[in-house]
Amino acid sequence: MKKTSTIDVAPTRCFGPAARILLSATVAAVSALACSNQGNRPLHAMRADGDVRYDVGDFAGAADHYQQYIDVKPSDPEIRYKLGRSYLEMGMYREARQNLQVAYDMSPDDERYIDSLAESLLNAGENEYLYAFLTKVVNERGRAADYLRLGEYGLKIGNPDDAVAALFTAAKLDGGFNARYQVALARFYADVGDRVNEVQRLRMAYSLSPNNAYVLRRAAELGEIVGPTWALTPTERGLGRSPTDTGAPAGTAR
Image (cartoon, rainbow, N blue to C red; front, side, top):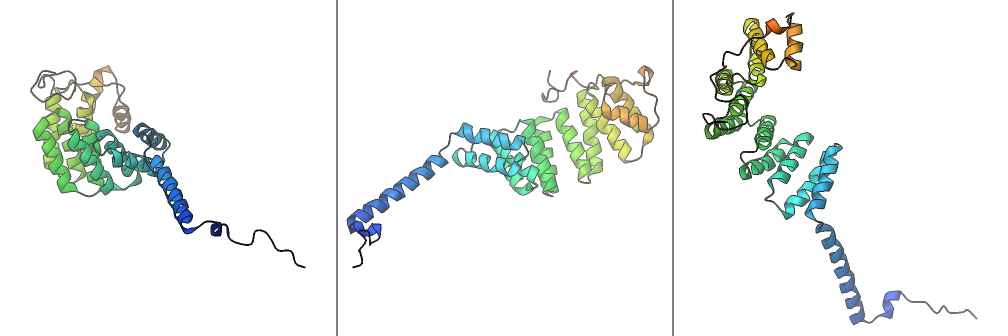
């Protein structure tokens, strides 16, 4: 005689309808709790995970963690900035622009936010908005660095006349104390093939920063003999009001 197995039915048949409903509800609740716990990681953990991935060049991973943070706290300008920078590194310029715009709107005096938003606009091909944005920054703050930024981007998008005027205004506001403004003018003259004025601005930059790598390299390319007598005092010396470019509004003590 064939022996009959004592387990010859599916396990779920051991429960009545009410028990099976209770079991299903319990499983669903446990699954929901697990998902909830995963989504409720502390903000500092999301930020730290994003930072780690950004530092090693995993920008997609960084963006994922920063986005999780923003989903919980959308009003954090620093994480908006980091998310935007991640998108910039991935070449996702419109996504970068959206987040960097929010960061700037929340903290319009942060130089990093201004610079990165300008970079995203340039790469996204939004040249008209870019120039309007940088002009707005100049009109609202009027600092030497703002005019320098306007001039440099103006040259990049093919607006040379206004750009050069902005570069000269920047150098004037600086008062001849920072090499970056002289270098910017030297680069412009190099682009248009004006060797005389390029060398003059390089010499002025050298007087302010004798170890400037660009100045030394470019001087060598031009066959210039660099030394103490090669330095020139910037023509703008004394026209500005401060020996340092601290970012204070033009015309104020800094």
